[in-house]
Amino acid sequence: MSTRTKIVIGGVAVGLLLMPFIGFWMSLLVVVGVPTAAYLMLDTNQRRRLRRISRKEIGR
Image 1: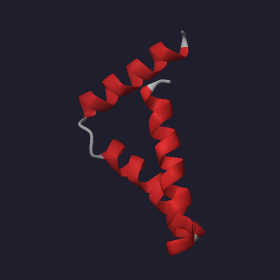
Image 2: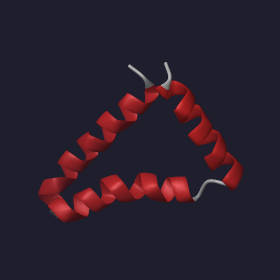
Image 3: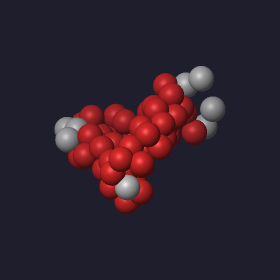
């Protein structure tokens, strides 16, 4: 299993665990917002490197 798959499964699990406590929309905000915030905190060069790596894996 790839690292990206593990992260996605973990995010879904966290969202499902949070849903009864904070509601659907707040848990969806956490699941979508945390990775988005992490991406936006990256430096421009780091974002470019991340996009390049992602494109290379698509061609596999």
